[in-house]
Amino acid sequence: AQKITQTQPGMFVQEKEAVTLDCTYDTSDPSYGLFWYKQPSSGEMIFLIYQGSYDQQNATEGRYSLNFQKARKSANLVISASQLGDSAMYFCAMREVPGAGSYQLTFGKGTKLSVIP
Amino acid sequence: NAGVTQTPKFRILKIGQSMTLQCAQDMNHNYMYWYRQDPGMGLKLIYYSVGAGITDKGEVPNGYNVSRSTTEDFPLRLELAAPSQTSVYFCASSYIQTSRPGNTIYFGEGSWLTVV
Image (cartoon, rainbow over all chains, first blue to last red; front, side, top):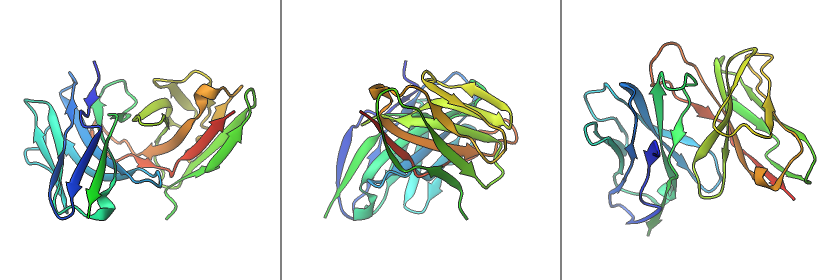
């Protein structure tokens, strides 16, 4: 079974509207962290937001928020007031603790977001 | 404020050639990683290191070797390049202090490798 599942290969959103990118995860570790990264066409990986498994509140960073539903094992990224510069690939990733001991991030396949003017 | 630096950014290799991707970080991070990203896919772990002198295999280690002689440097060696190694390679680092999942992993800008 995949550890991180992103079911939306591509999404379109109108500029200034909000969009939700889905992410579900699978782990048996009680302690884990969920990350979202943005990868624009230039290729770099940009960290957006982090949610810990023990965090009581949903994480927020500017226009980004994470809708964390622990019982459903979902960690959806919400982008409010979309901008043209938000057009990119978005990756959900998980770090399990202790996991395999590498503290690595396991990535989903990504969602390509296109913002329409 | 360099962060994680990878070189080269682009490289074309012929089948059977060898090369080394260089990676350096200046944040005194103990953990370093090499990932590869195939077209339309997420990143997969090749090798990682928990500190100088200690390395271990990730999910897709075949055809690669690494070394970690210093905290700063973590080169990735491709031996006998094959077309299946055409990919984008990312070096990354993180400071892991305790069993806490929140430490951010910082990525280099990526190295585009084509094997023909």
